[in-house]
Amino acid sequence: MRLCKTYQFHSGIKGFKLGWSLAGHPLMTVYCYLFGDTMVDTGQSHLKREVVSIARDNRVKQIFLTHHHEDHSGNAAAIQTLHGADVFGHHLSREKLKTPYSILPYQKYVWGKTTPLKLNPLPKEIETVLGKMIAIHTPGHSKDHTVFFLPDQGIIFSGDLYLGDRIKFFRADEDIGTQIESLKTLVDLNFDILLCGHNPKQKKGKEHICLKLNFLENLYGDIIELWEKGLAEKQIFRSLKLKESHLVKYFCFGNVSMMNGVRSAIKHHKSINRV
Image (tube, rainbow, N blue to C red; front, side, top):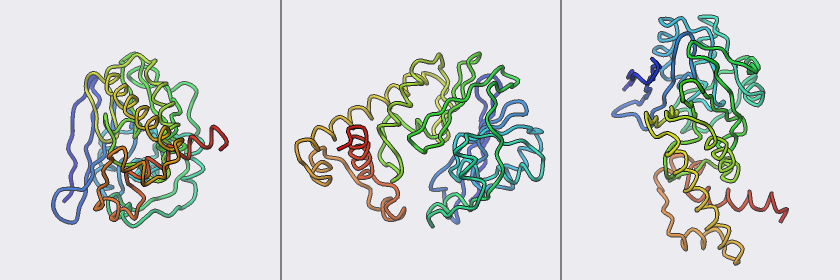
């Protein structure tokens, strides 16, 4: 099944919900966004045909990547090659994407292969048809993660920083402590619309960011409190009555799980306290 559904958001922004599966409904979907000649993220390479067509029909000239993950950067190289669009990203994104890199089998199945490309440095001031757009480095989900803010419109393109008010799974390379700090940087901004890479919110965007922040702060605090009492990871998991989806965990080869959240909090706490 190939899913490519168009949504209309505030200020004329178009969102394209993209999904793919061999049979049945896609396991996961992702959004890319477009306004004027500007695209934010490019979806997974499984939907190359559709996304390249969207870029061509809308005469996309500039693409901004929130981070390097294959479901966000998957079609950037194709659009760059076929239509000459300039692609911009954080300097860590540029380093990651300049050469081929390996991904796990589940990532290749759900999203598709990765394709290296040349990224341009992010401009100090990004000009768009909706006014200036500000790039804000927000690591945690990945080291290169960046959100884009349209202050005149009160809109945030949040990539994978938000995802949901509460999180059931964490990637093995995520840093909860750093995510908390990144979320705090958004709380001080004036916005209402949250255009997430997987779960957009057309109103009360800041409230949803605050809910996610509150959830992570409480989870982090509870984990560290028990760890400082001498409990091991598995004991902390059981004491907090956290739940694991073993189907997701094993399908993703352990790269995605709730236990990763426990480990991430402990690792971050150790790093800042040099334990």
